[in-house]
Amino acid sequence: MMQLIVIAIGGAVGSVLRFMLSNGLGVWLGRSFPFGTLSVNLLGCFLMGLMAEALVLQRVALSLEYRAAILVGVFGGFTTFSSFSLETFYLLEQGQFSKAGLNIATNVLGCLLAVWMGMLAGRGLFVIGQGNLPGFDWPFPYALTIINGIGALLIGLLLSLLSQKLQLAMEDSVIVSVLMIGAFLTLSGLYLAMALLESEYEFSDHWPALLTVLSSNVIFCGFNLWLGAWLARQF
Image (cartoon, rainbow, N blue to C red; front, side):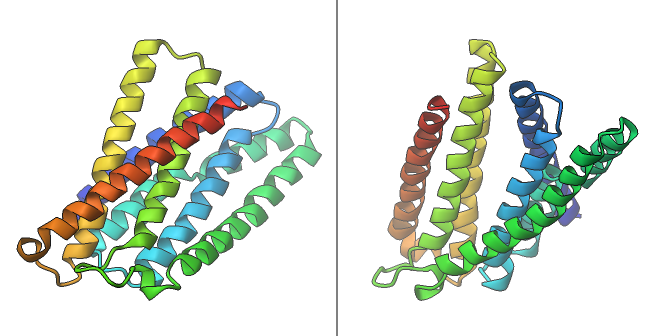
């Protein structure tokens, strides 16, 4: 039952992110080509490959429920094959065969390439010490922290870009930003803490190290959120 609940929560988060990004890019770039669906599929496949490498192939200590929430829930809800299929059908129905063929090729081949690139990035991150920096009382999970930073960078870029292009009211922009950033920092911190605690380390014996890891995650993700917002302003 718990696995179904966490997948449902993850799916809701992924679906909301997909709706925001897909519609935002549609408003920005126009509706002549399904840029929004293509973008969420490519981005989602890259992150799926990255997280699959981190959580499954590298055997990071994280329970099945949390892995399912991230891989099946969030990224399953974020990517969409049905929207891609429907939009391709509409292009064919309108006689825009070249655009339909381009949409098929970029989604299928592009998504395969994105998954491969994500898995390569994940393998590269776990080369040193299987993702942990040695020399600490508690192994510092640098690989997972970098992955969290990548997510923070994308969220900062997404929030800033969409608030500009969609011309959201200041109140709406602040509410969405606070909710998304707060949820991300909380979940990414829990994700690190659970990975460490399930590696047979006791919180009572290593709480200063755990606080160091969580503080480092907040600082690093905060910087990447700012960097993503700064990059968005350059467009």
